[in-house]
Image (cartoon, rainbow over all chains, first blue to last red):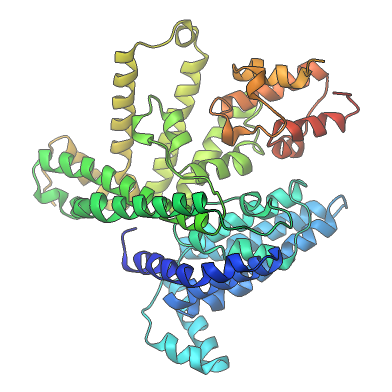
Length: 410
Length: 77
């Protein structure tokens, strides 16, 4: 997460915002503000490398088209078929990237650069000096597009103009590291233009500052803890434990810091988007942890997986819990360690649900000591599952072996 | 006149009716988690003798939208 493109993106974004904001607030017409938002997002991506634009402009135009088609088909016989085909079409690039990362990234870089070189030589020349790049923000873009389409299908979002969808798709603050904002978080303003408000501006700038502090002051010194996943076999057990604990804090502070910057930058544009973290490491059970960790992804999965799979009915809730957690896990990467991560957390959530239904859990409020002990146990559980996010399958037995003091002979 | 839907939400969520309005949704109510959402669906179906479809439940993101959905089923609330 604390890598060069992400840092560059936010530095560029803040500079671009400083230039764009006077014009943004001088425009008193909503649709022109939205057009400026979309252009700002495109420039922010294009500055990293123009290649990203060759992918994302057609992607969001395609989303706008699917949104229109879904609206037209609403209430007809073919609505469901069109909807399912649309979802599949949107998922193709993301799934291809997760399943065939090398092939997809090669193809992504070659085709997009070739397009620029052939049809837009000046941008092609600029693109030539840029590094080989992953399709930054694709997981976030795909899930935001899916959310828009699903909400359109269930008639929670009426027909939108292309400029509004592009403003949502290219909303710069959330493009690279989220949060996974809903369309209505950016689209519910109706036709009213955003007016400059000093209190919102100060609050946004404050959040950006807090985010920068988390990333550069708190998380940065902990970054070397990541190396424990490479060198666990040559370190004493105590060191492995210590680095694992430090990694959980690095992971949280880094991600939460970038989210704060994104939420603050959104607020500078006059949009209040919801945050991603609310003291997740101090929660007393796994359900509360997930309700406060990467909250925008959890909310996304609740809306679009948990409810449709039947999470609101007792008889189908178990399968809904498992489907939801597997979606959250596999969103990060389609791999066996991530599938294991999803399965373990789903089982823990199911066990927690059973306990909450148990009469003993309802009898009386837990004591302060029990609450603290439960928070520690939850934190330990989460810490022990985090290596699954970072390790390849073949290294997992070795790493967990080291945690219990086993010597690694390989 | 007391609002039957607001009282129902207040009872299930364990909050005071005064703290709820048609604009209230899970994002601004800590008590409205997935477990409570399940209880809310059951409570609405039982109280108003209706059956909610998956699409309707997905749409019910605020108390106001829930009211619209129930009204759409011919219930006057």
